[in-house]
Image (cartoon, rainbow, N blue to C red):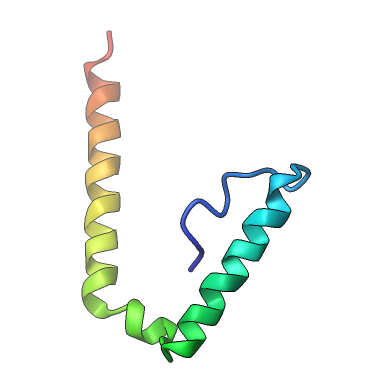
Length: 68
């Protein structure tokens, strides 16, 4: 699990420090709410993720076969 957009800023970028502070604030909020990974990652969420990956791969394969 990772925070949304947390991998989009390069490590050398000065904005990375702000991003890390923001991630820390999110973590504190999750701790206050007593929200754990097992509360977020459920059997249904894993199933949805697998379906999305399969759809994306099928779409990519279709586009490759339609290219001249």
